[in-house]
Image 1 (cartoon, rainbow, N blue to C red):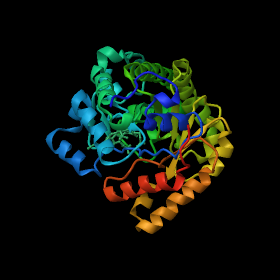
Image 2 (tube, rainbow, N blue to C red; image 1 turned 90 degrees about the vertical axis):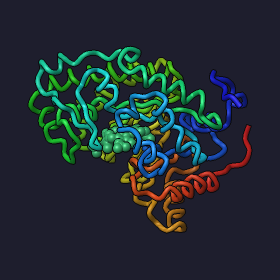
Image 3 (cartoon, rainbow, N blue to C red; image 1 turned 120 degrees about the vertical axis):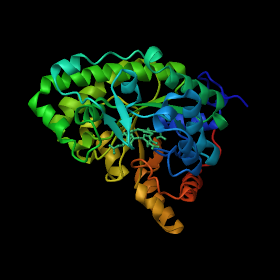
Image 4 (cartoon, rainbow, N blue to C red; image 1 turned 30 degrees about the vertical axis):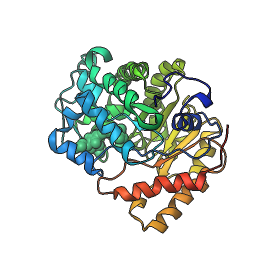
Length: 359
Ligand code: 1CP
């Protein structure tokens, strides 16, 4: 049965779509929706089969293959949302940044000088990443049960970390020293990245993405003053450009316990929280006008089944009875996770939170 593609009254929409999008907007839902960060990935044998045939870049630059990877976890599990299979660096590659993945992103010529920042071209999504927009359309046409699709991008500061350092890192020290050594150039780079990601996310929404998410994986490395000056500035600029679209906006912040009060100023619908902050405390810091997403420790999926249920219950109890919780892990799922543990997690969240039929 075809999912309704136009917004309508809740009763006209398929239920999975309504449940996830209603939870983003803090409306009452019949059960707590659940999806998993990095739900398409190496813990799934079907993803490993796909990767045995093609490399990661080919996977992200082919609309059919990216759509297939997006749909794999939806066929296996009763998930309440899909996330486009791509990478935060894919649009930068479209802008001409030389990149390899092994497995994390490696930037051939890191960007550090004012001239290098100014030479970064603007992103034209239709011209530079048409395969991403085609993948969005294919997923929308094929998603089972009317499951809604989340489009995403890297938040500007997190992209800056890879562009300046050139590779994954624990400390991203060159990126952080850059903020102190040349703050004006850092701000210019963040503004450029913000404009590019705003165009990229708007194009994903126009192609059919029903919610948009910014991944701020590394801003937790910053103190609150630098977070506000650099990371929040970039995220605000993206959010301001997207707000008029009327699509729910999600901001995931890793290691952000000390930054949640600053995040409360960001005009998003949902904040994704890592496992270090209990959701009750996160809700208090963020205020009543934001939904929360998270935040089971990815390591908890390695617990015995009964223990896993207790850890899930702990997250649900922290989230509390008020509307506006989307269950997820606190960061991406680990590649050596047992796929059956994921099935048990999703079923337990649905069963534990079932609130009976609602109109
Ligand atoms: O070999 C492979 O299969 C490549 C591994 C891989 C995968 C499966 C990479 C390289 N990226 C991805 C997909 C991906 N990346 C998705 C898919 C959609 C889904 O969630 O199912 C998403 C949303 C991302 C986003 C991403 N990439 C983030 C933000 C989220 C997070 O985990 O914090 C980051 C930081 C990246 C960079 C990146 N790309 C790949 C890796 C291994 C990394 C992390 C490197 C590092 O630790 O710095």
